[in-house]
Image 1 (cartoon, one colour):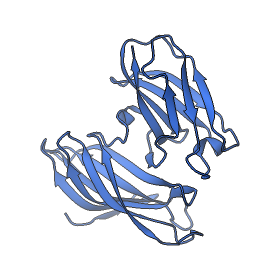
Image 2 (tube, helix red, strand yellow):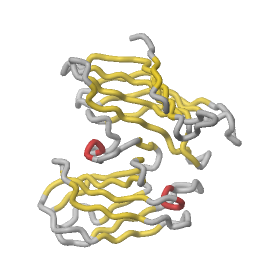
Image 3 (cartoon, one colour):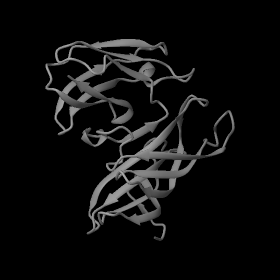
Length: 236
C-alpha cells in the first residue's frame, strides 16, 4: 500500500503498512500528527491503528503513545511501521519512538518498540467500551492496583495508585476518572479523581453498586479521554 497523507486541519495522517485479515477486514498502521497538542512546533505524533471493513468502511481508529519514565513525560513522537495478525485475533505492532528535539536528555534519540493489542485495538480488554476514548498511553501499567480481585458483590473495592519513578504521574496535575463497564458495554460506575498536587501514591476506596457475578472492565482515564491503565475485575 502506498503511503498516503491527508489534512484534517488539526492533523496529518500517514499509513505505512496495510494487511487483509482472516475475516476480510483491512488493518493499517501508521502515524497521526496531532497539531492540537502543540500548534506551534507540531511536536506530537501518535502511533495509529485503523480498522476497515471488507467494503473499506471505517470500523475504528486507535491512537497510542508512550510514557517515558526517564524523560518524565509522554514521548511525543511515536509510529507503527508493521502489523501482524495473531492466532487469538489480536495484533502485534512494531514501530519507532523518538524523543523530542527539544528534549533535555538525548534530543531526537530513536527507540524501537513493539505492542500487542486485542482485536479491538485495546491494550487492556474493554477500551472500546469507553465513550470518547482519544488515546492509549503505554508505560503506566502497574501504576494502579485493584484489590481485592476477585471481589464479592457489595464488598468495598480499593485502588492503589503509585508512582513508577520520579516522573510526574497523571494524578498529580490533572483530573482523572475511574470507569467500570460490563462486557456488554454498560457503564455501572464512575468516580472522578481530583488532582492530588503530589506525586505520592494514595489509596482510593470505592463503594460499588451491587454487581452480578462476572467479569468487568475497570479503566483509569483522563477527563480528555486518554487511557492510562486498566484491569479486569472479577465479581463473585
